[in-house]
Length: 373
Image (cartoon, rainbow, N blue to C red):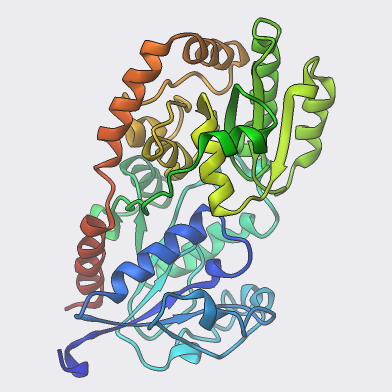
């Protein structure tokens, strides 16, 4: 299509820099999908000073990346007060700005803001100081006419209630899933240092509820002398509570912290696991349970937030605030081979709902609607 007919989009790719969390992986996959749409002309930008040179190598091949830099911390002070720098500072004139991670730059163009969850409102004690500034930035964007996107009906309903928005001001689109690399179970068990283990994939932070998982596993470990717990993921914050739970565990020698791993190591560790444990207190979407389902691994998640909406009946859903409930779910999944097989089959059906082939056109249509096309 001629360039003049394509929708020009400034796309915030800041979360692609550094070690990627779930948000970074989703943002990258969405960008790669939208880049294939011939009706869109995307330019990636990053609100950063130190990472300004890394962006061109982090975006998908063929995506233009803005070379301009600006300190992120300074934007947090300037945007609510003087409304500068605008998104156009990075990209030049555009038809739409997609702020992919809560905080949107001011812009002359219409703005779409992705809000992954409302942890900062529901659990402020679980948030960093920067995260606690999100409500102010969101209110500024909403007052300037921004449209909000979130990935689940649950969070969309929360956003409408908390910010007093009409239905047409908030859009819901489920994310797609990237194809997973199927791992080698024997290599995974060797890496884990155990033949029989539960696995969790999570950055250490309070809302992931890892101290409760350690306590629940510790109760189960007394009955299962060969069972181990493998915890994959980097330190985030709130590590002290995690370490205190680990120090108090009677079977701490069977809890293995592996930290950040490569994509291949992650696939191997999943392949060798008996089940994934993911008793998060609150999520925006919940990619690790779906990743486990793609890998043919049964899941224990949590009856909380949007997780029941996302995984449906394809996972056990204990009360994440009840250690005994978590332990009972782990006990069932460890000891019942038929249950595990049933959950694997249901998981295979569940993940078919989440594809970028579906989500990409839905995002493109949302872009056109917000931009007035």
